[in-house]
Image (cartoon, rainbow over all chains, first blue to last red; front, side, top):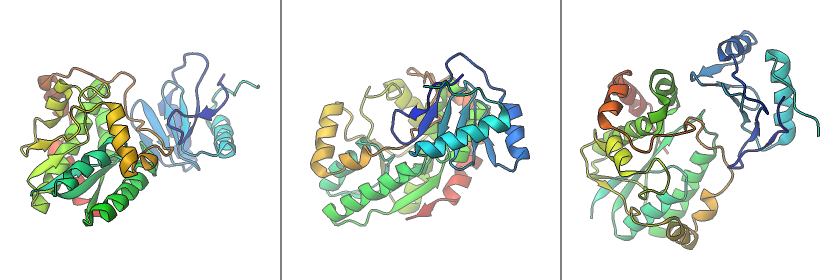
Length: 92
Length: 208
């Protein structure tokens, strides 16, 4: 389960942080995104997926959406969740 | 007066450091290491705005080299120990800056580093980061504290640019090394073809 999406510390992006300790299978996620035509940079402990907006997917489960618009980040989060099977966001 | 190459990140410190060098009458060439996709577009936009302001204030052209650095970060993250990633990253930045200095006829390198201001700016890390460059390195802010730097940044008008929202470098490890050992750093660097990487980045640099 993810906490509510929130603006990151430096204010330029929106992040989603899992409530529990998780280790994402980045190889599987990267392969799934590429299969869907999304360019992915594999930096071993994180992936950077050229979605709209661009998203960093850390092995620890932290996601960072490079946008200041909450609606864009939420849409990208739901897309990612549907594609690669991430846990959902805890409802308020 | 001398000609120097200044590393500019878009943060608070580097425009203040450049301000002191320009005030003394030195000629400056700026270098921005472009960390995308580990950052967003904001650091470059900030550097462009910093330089716009400083060019106008000091009536100096200040060319800006934009050096691609994202692929270097990816290679370092894949091939080397994450713990020392910031020191390795800075070694590549310094060596790229030195290549540009050679091209520009510059005789010194400069940075906005202040000792101990962030965890990675320790003496041992600075030594490890700069051990492979030969030009003298000027650090106008080395003994300043954060409040002093911010006060100058506000006075010269760069603070509000530096503090605009942006995405921090995502390549920074959770616990960056604060005391690096040069032998260990060199051993890590041997895992990658550093000369080829630097050649490639400097070749792909563009002047803005």
